[in-house]
Amino acid sequence: MSILSGKNILLGITAGIAAYKTASLVRLFIKAGANVKVVMTPASKDFITPLTLSTLSKNPVYSSFTNEDDDNAMWNNHVELGLWADLFIIAPATANTMSKMVNGTCDNLLLATYLSAKCPVYFAPAMDLDMYKHQSTINSFEKLNAFGNVMIPATSGELASGLVGEGRMAEPEDIVSFIENDVLDKLPLRGKKVLITAGPTYEAIDPVRFIGNHSSGTMGFEIAKAAANLGAEVTLVSGPSSQVVTHSLINVIRVKSAQEMYDEVHKYFASVDIAILSAAVADYRPKNVADQKIKKKETTFTIELEKTKDILKSLGAIKKLQFLVGFALETNNELEHAKGKLESKNLDLIVLNSLNDKGAGFGGSTNKVTFITASHEIIAHELKSKAEVAKDLMQQILKQTDA
Ligand code: CTP
Image (tube, rainbow, N blue to C red):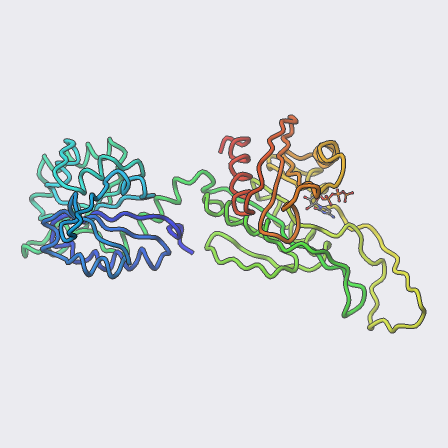
């Protein structure tokens, strides 16, 4: 999955011949899972039609302050467009438009949107080689960079004029990978490694039976997605769960028993920065696992159980610089029990679920959590979707680790 998946991308097209390549650019953004809207300068419509771009982007294309084709002329709100965008990409960016961007000129919808946008702005210049080298163009590049806009440099090659040199707009594939890398590089957990456990564990009784629990794994999978979306390289060790995730930054390792989870977690723990153990690990397992299916004989049947290893506690005992997060599912004296686990397992943060709260804990798609930090700060959250809880948790970790 691309880091651009789910992002709102506003593509600004100005009047250069490279505008014809923006059809491919829109398709690539859509393929990456982004939502795309297009704003064009009026002159750029000579190079590519709004119809092509609206068909590919599945959205109306904007090029003037009012929708002139409509009898009930509608105001195209540049502020709304600017606020909608997570990323604004101006490609191709002509010398004329860049000069206007530098000076705050605002004589078309694209420029008004540029001035209103609060999101990161990228610009991919395209022009003839002498224009590209002109001092006024270089001044524009420098000023736009100083504004915090990011330049996607032009490449060298044959130009529309027939001359050969610098000034060709970067190819659409290269623009997309440039933006993906730039977005990734700026994420707060870029370069950090996060280990997460999820789901239940199954403890074998015999070849066909096991002791398990109702954990669906949803919370752990959502945490993995939230961490990866912040740029972290995630190792997700999951017990049996029907959850699936495809993300280039998430490596899923499937296990069954508490012992297998323990072994996998210990393979990775030394090299991670953050470990979040959300799995509902069985506390006990059958002491002896039958080789053959157990036949029914007596009216009662007893299985002797032994304790599994507490994975979280074992990490707390050996942790060095790792930030360690545990979960606690409680039914009574919740805060007290959770604080006890925070101390005894040497955690930096514990996430408390109370089974007394409706919509919290196993199974469902929501959760209601309270964070307790190592310094016993208590942060209570409302009932939210597990995806939102995962985002809150990652923000709390960022706050505590200054990442
Ligand atoms: N945990 C673990 N390994 C175990 C048991 C629990 O890593 N064998 C982790 C869970 O992933 C969770 C935390 O420990 O992050 C709390 O688990 P919980 O079962 O609530 O607490 P316990 O310490 O097992 O205490 P109790 O069951 O008595 O409440």
